Length: 216
Image (cartoon, rainbow, N blue to C red; front, top):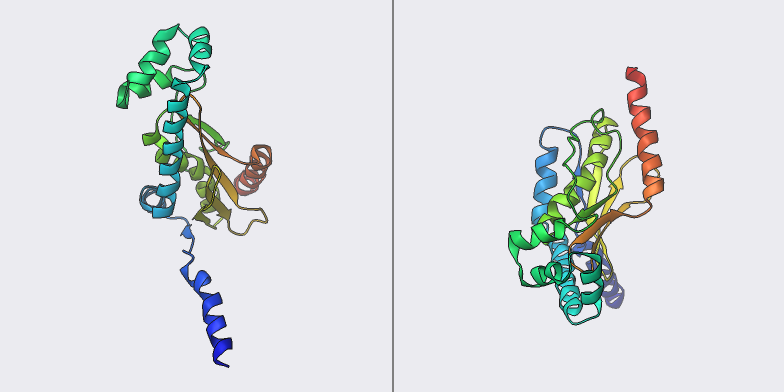
């Protein structure tokens, strides 16, 4: 009997220890709640910091590899790579943003479902300091969609190896959680992206249309 009770307690510990997802529904404070979660959640911060460490490792490896010649040929001679190696902070951010595909896009005004015709599904991020804002940008359209549907999103950091950093569950929709990945690039910067982009684009368009149809 005692052994059975002890086994039950042991099996219950992981379930009790697992953090509950953060749920965000409608209301004026939704954006503040999203910001606090992305900036303060210990598990998500650890995932972003781990991605930043991998980026630094890639850069260190690139300095000692044949990538020097490849970058020199493709971009402005040795000056670009030399500047990248020696720069830090804002100067390094400016150099990275000059690379093809790395210039930050204007921040969209995605504050309601009418102003959000399509969700952003991938972002090129030049610097680790911008990762939190980038995650928020990817989550925001889905939060707005769920608000318009009278529902909510559930945010859960993803543990384990790989690039997956955050799971976004859409309540009241029969869809697997949306997975946000943070992938460091070999020459610096990051790609922050959703898995299954074509499926998600179609899902968002369909549900947005369903929300807006009664008002037309």
